[in-house]
Amino acid sequence: MSKSVINKPKVFISYAWGSKAFQEKVISFSTNLRGDGIDVLLDKWSLKEGNDTYAFMERCVNDPSITNVLILLDKLYKEKADSRVGGVGAETQIISPEIYNKVDQDKFIPIVFEKGPNYEVYKPSYLQSRLHFDLASADQYDDEYQRLVKRLYGVEILKKPELGIKPAWVDTPHTVPVKTINAYSLLKTIQPKGVNTEKYLSYLLQIKDKIINFKNDTELKILPYEEYLELYQETGAIRDDFLQLLHYVTYIEKGEEHIANFLEDLRNNVDKEKGLQQEFKLILIHEIFIYTIAFYYKMQDYKKLSYTLGKTYFTARYDGNRATNYNIFYSKNDNFDNAINQRDNKKYYSGKAQYWIENINIDTCSKNEFIFADLLCYNYALFGKDYHYDWYWFPLTYIYSGRSNDMLKAFATKLQSREWLLKATQIFGYNDEEEFKRELLRIEELSKKGEFENYRFTSSFDNATNLCDFIEAKDLGLYR
Image (cartoon, rainbow, N blue to C red; front, top):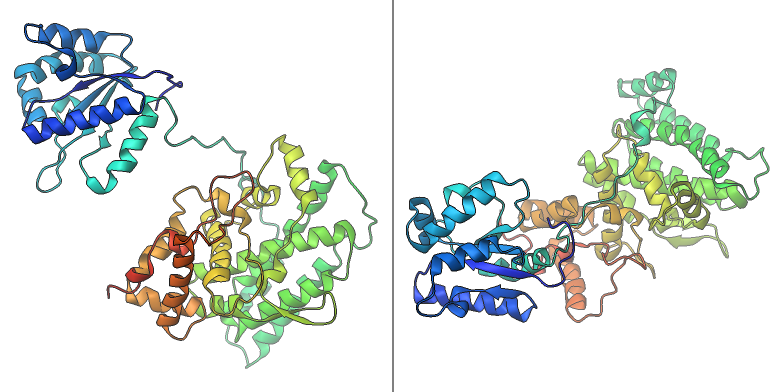
């Protein structure tokens, strides 16, 4: 990657004179570069009859004004370079010592310009270990060409992420007492019918009481950010207690229903409160809901996942009970965001998301699984059968998934399989995969018309991704 921005790139093109079609491709490529503001030294443009070709090549390779030498690779170039034949052989004798002997090798850029019948890449021996650009494949030519031009201008192709801080979980011991862990583990044992369920509900009630009573005996007003965050950190023990109990939900009949009811009841109780106590509890509820989705998906329990995402929840806010979706667990909190920004002297897209990522409970899920769960909530809001509301779940953590969004991309790509499509159909609440296909097609068509409103942070160029970013409706269930 280039070390600094280059305002006026100047390149020398090294290639083998092959077929007429190949030479025309070289000229077209060079013309495009010049059209994009890059000065190109090409023998066909710079040499006349009687000129010394070796002297021209040597001067170009060693000229300090030449910012890069582009080596266009094909079968003929490899053969001539390895056998040191002709002009290419002469260039190889000039270039190879530069590559072998100098630490700074950014000047020389191999470009695969033609591949073999089995897609083999033709590289001379002295370039075997060098990374290359691929302009041989028509389907990725435009993307690779744009990457190359950015490289020639010294623009970072893939920006290196900022160095973060050590995750809190590295030094944080288990906050759940051993006695509690042992009590929860007994839920795995075979007991008389209903006993485990009764115990599980009792444990949930205890956790609910801990959350509701958190700091209720303290008068909390506006606090300095250090004190604000210190107080919130105390909720970590309650979160971990809930997550420890969540691990045993599979041993409880209709366990997902008990968890969903616990969250709904907790949310409605917290709605009656005000001030910082309410803020802390809403943030905690938001977080543990995402963990619940992450855990169900990790355990491949799609029935529990579908139930939790598709359930109708009721809120006691406003005028009496009102039916809604899992968005009742979503919370927005400027105070918390500001506290994290002040702590690090940064302007995060979301201080809350930053804190969650730092303090991930790795016994329950990984950072990527947590982010995926947040994105899955967003995607269910788009494609789910039973999500009926006037706004979509905003996945605060999506910005930490990177451009590739590997887990969501893998989820979407697997939808080409009929087997996986049936599982996804279940997750999104449909009885028939054709219904799911139609919903995906609807969003896809809105996107093509420019009528779909992408979700993203105001100052971010990256959108929260959805399934349509990785697969088209026509490709769903193509394979067994």
